[in-house]
Amino acid sequence: MIRSVLVANRGEIARRVFRTCRELGIATVAVHSDADAGAPHVREADTAVRLPGDAPADTYLRGDLLVRAARAAGADAVHPGYGFLSENAAFAAAVADAGLAWIGPPPAAIEAMASKTRAKELMAGAGVPLLAPVDPAAATEADLPLLVKAAAGGGGRGMRLVTELAALDEELTTAKAEAAAAFGDGEVFVEPYVVGGRHVEMQILADAHGTVWTLGTRDCSLQRRHQKVIEEAPAPALSEDLRTTLHHAAEQAARAIDYRGAGTVEFLVSGNGRAYFLEMNTRLQVEHPVTEAVHGLDLVALQLSIAEGRPLEAAPPRPHGHAVEARLYAEDPAAGWQPQTGTLHRLEVPDGVRLDSGVTDGDTIGVHYDPMLAKVIAWAPSRDEAVRKLAGALERARIHGPVTNRDLLVRSLRHPEFTDPAALDTGFYDRNLPALTAPADDDAALFALAAALADAHGRSRFGGFRNVPSAPQVKTYACAGTEHEIRYRLDRDGLSAEGFPGVQLLALGPDEVVLDVDGLRRRFTVARYGDRVHVDAPGAHPTASRALTALPRFPDPTARTEPGSLLAPMPGTVVRIADGLTEGDHVEAGQPLLWLEAMKMEHKITAPSAGTLTTLPARPGQQVEVGTLLAVVTD
Image (cartoon, rainbow, N blue to C red; front, side):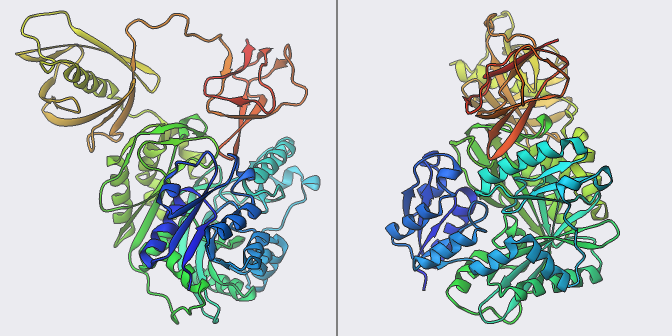
């Protein structure tokens, strides 16, 4: 009997495992870096152990420290979560050698799937076509496009698409650095990239008594930077023959390596319906909730049961309905998916959907870890209903803080290519990102008017109304790069706002404004955090929320930057400067100048135009904040 579990992880997955442990009466132990000292998973655990340092390489990737923490806290089992050391055979063996139960597959099974050669041999035995690896030293134009992949992990880290042969060496270098930072192993390999393919995977569960469950398919084709964004179960628009092939291949793979616990076998399905084996993930997946929803299972509880030696039933519950999951990230899709940092003031989703989150209101989103804030999961009897339910919940959610991909998720779920499952493939964002991130028919000025009215009410003991004629009140807000100057009067005759001839004020409070806009009643809720104002109007617009910045009436004329200045778009570390680059060099538009590492990903900083590199203050190893000057390129 397992009585106490240490989760060798952080954030959302640690909280997810703790939730099941509490339901089963199992004590919980958290580990945390210094950056995570106040994180929700630490606050919720019964016991917590500090891992000195901030970077993953010094903390969550230190197997020796994790084993020591488990023994010090009196835990008798270790759950690895996903990412970090979850697929590290040496760590699994070290846990077992310390006399602790490992809640995962045997080290030999992890090692078998960690070897890409061995994994491909197993799939060949199951009759699944394979993508042959490509020797990067011998690659030619005929081999393009290529995909560089990390050998030791997933989640899009250490993965790079190569469409030009000249870029292969640079992408290999970047992928190796990302893989080493994320998984402690910089090994990468290269294989062909299948254009127009779908990412389809099989969830498996196996016990120590010979029973293997194949728990249906998931489709995870909507990806950015090769990291999943929207997942669903079951995978739609697959032929019965293909489903049978995938089920058989996944079961054969599990039996071939005497697998135990939860795992996933991933495939790339081409446009002609052929399945190519990608890899087997010997751990729980981020997207496991959609499988739980359609089968009515708790996969973490089953992992614990299997680790205790209990047998599975002869067959799993039959699937029912459809589930869709969206990953909410602190990132700006319109700016190259740049991760965002800052305080998450509020994260609130409507009832009726499942929210798995690693953060809570008031938490700080930092630079050291993945920018995923939460997963939102919706189940319904049919795919159409589940998609509609999830899109509606995201649209009505109140998310106050850093920029997120919420609007992108809503638009993606309602896009014709997504609602028609036959059109799904991994190139969805390559084709559609400009349209999905384009500004909506903008009524931001109306949101700014609501913010100004609420602000006036909050500051005035008379509720903002005036009994005598006066000069208009003036308030200026910035929203998505555009300034909106609001000029209005409030008196006993009502609202008079310049530029809003058809708008009437129906109700006013410090946190809520109700307006009649050409006969349409619209309710705005207003929340202030310093000079940032978040205004929500659920159901009123495809983009039902606006983040505004209140601007001072008399801006500081010295608060300017030199033309051509490249400023750090996020906090991070300068990991390297382009080879041989010095001040005075001529650079071309789009030429890479330097790389920043933030949230376990490398971000390329390029020249905005052709010109002369007149200033280069950035240095490798330098820690930078948002807005730090990195370089200046003069036309």
